[in-house]
Amino acid sequence: MELYDQEKPVANKTRSYLMMLLAIILFIFSIDLLTVAMGQLNNTVASDILKATRNPFVSLFIGLLMTALIQSSSTVTSSIVAIVAAGNMSLEQAVPMVMGANIGTTLTSTLVSFSYIMKKKEFKRAISAGILHDLFNIITVFILLPLEVYFQFLSKTAHLLASLFVTDESYSGSFDYNKVFTRPLTEWISDTIQIPFLTLVLAIFMVFGAIKMLSSSVYKAFILESFKDINNLIFKNTYMALIYGMFFTAAVQSSTVTTSLVVPLVANRKVSLKKSFPFIIGANIGTTITAAIAAFYKTEAAIALAIVHFLFNFFGAMIFIPFPVIRNIPVRMATFMGQKSVQTRFIGFAYILLTFFIIPFLLIYFSNS
Image (cartoon, rainbow, N blue to C red):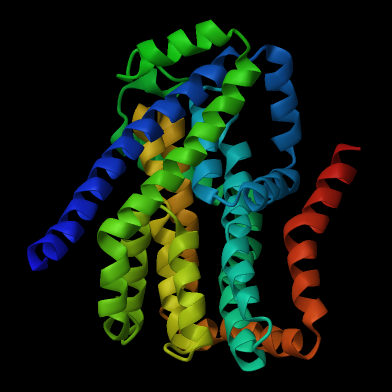
């Protein structure tokens, strides 16, 4: 009986490793299929995409709304990388959309906090932790979006860094269809379906499924036991919390998983809100690895966009982490929101609806009008 109990965890881990490998292959395949579909869309559709994203603020809110709806910034950012790789969107147009995806992904941790709504004290701490993730991304967007719009700060820096990785000038345009090992199969599927838009929808669902599968398998194989064992060690030091946040999220491929783990810890006073903030910032940096994997096509534009995703979160970390006074600003704002949400529970629901759905939808609608 004891031998059986010992073999069971080993078998479960082996199954998780196999699932993880399968998820990575599926992810590569689905991104390739998405790129093929985008490359085959007619010029009218491509023109509509370009018109919709020409306004950086519309592009920002499209990214936010898309991510809030499907609850995966990894899916959205990797899909954007594929669209850029296919040549249907410029890097400059894609940058605000990636910023919006970073805000949209924070919805999950805020929703997790509502599981404590019947417990007044726990709910106050939980929603503060959830909103803290939102505030980090929103403040970072307020700082970096104007710099990008007026000076192309992120896109020019990313182009410069991407040129170090891709020296062949032929890589600076759209995607070279002969570079990916999954290409024969993806072309066969696309030719069989013969409807690029339908292929596009199928590819997006496959990207989402692959990321969820990868997240679940890595979480079971590596994170679940480790997170419980080294809980106290993780949050002891600001920079250690940042590094652990990066490591866990890079492994799991989802900042929503790791930040959602923090909410119960803060709610139950295992970790203070102040100490959880560096971990959340690290999680934001760690999630950029998905776009990096999606950019394996080696087109300069795709690599540059993956670098933009990293730079956005890296510069955000550099704004807050070194300076305790600045780092405390979002913490105090989140604490204030937590107190108000406890006094009037409606405020929490109103915040979610306005931030993630109503305001983005209205701005997109009136901008297009």
